[in-house]
Structures are given as C-alpha cells and as structure tokens.
Length: 149
Image 1 (cartoon, one colour):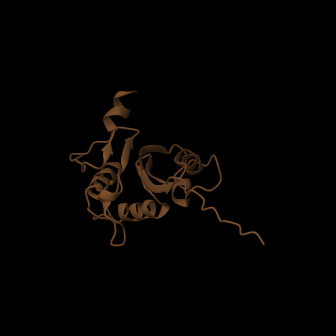
Image 2 (image 1 turned 30 degrees about the vertical axis):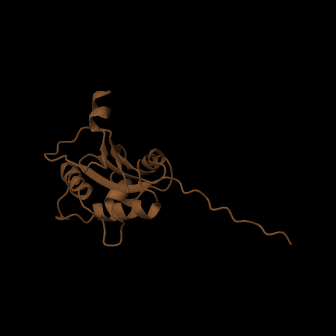
Image 3 (image 1 turned 45 degrees about the vertical axis):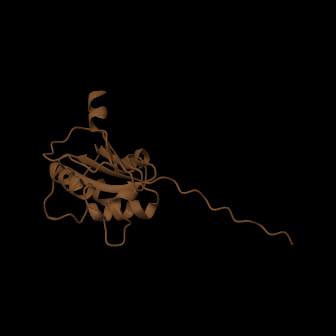
C-alpha cells in the first residue's frame, strides 16, 4: 500500500481590527477583515451580536497584520480587551489602550515575546492619541494612510 503524505494546510494570515460606529467600538480578529466588516454591518450573516445590535455604519479604524498564527492574533485580541481600566470606553480610549498593548514586551502570560512578531499597524482614520510611540519592530503607518486621502 502506498503511503500518503499529509500536507499541512498553510494558515491564512489573521489580522486584528478595530471598528467604530456612532461612539461605539469593537475589536476582533479575522483572516478577512473586509468580509468581517460586512458581517458587522448586517450585509452578510454572522456578525457579532454586539455590533449587529448597534446598527449599520461600522467602519475600520485600524488593521494590524503580522501575526504568524491565529493563536497569536487571538492572544493579542484578548489582551487588547483587558488593558486597564476596562470600564472606560470610546474610540480615543480604545486607541490609547492599543498603544499601551503595542508597547508591552508580552501580550499575555502565554504569548511569545512581542518583539518576535513584527506587526504592521495600518490606520484607516485619524484618531487623537497623545502617545503614539511604538517599539522599532512595529511599523505604524498612520501618516501614509491619512495623507494619501
């Protein structure tokens, strides 16, 4: 009998995203954030209950790529939702907490060291934030997105 070799499927790259709509924000991960945004807006089935309950009009604030596995993206998502203070909301606070997370040496206790995952932050809209410094292994391209419009 001939031995059949199992081919490991190449994992799709997962992205972290933040969306907003009428003062509400939501953070998630997806291999296809454009399709996921359509789900959040109710154009396709499968949007998050939270976003569907807030109506249409969700827009991307930023996309973060560079995760090597789905698990890394999920760890980053979890960590983004647990930056203190957790009970403070709004878009500016969400972005402030994102920059706090981007500057951590490790996102969660079980995550690999952050410097081993060179992330790219792509801003789709301008959001005020006082401290936008990031480590050298992170590419923050807000200025390219904002100035190209």
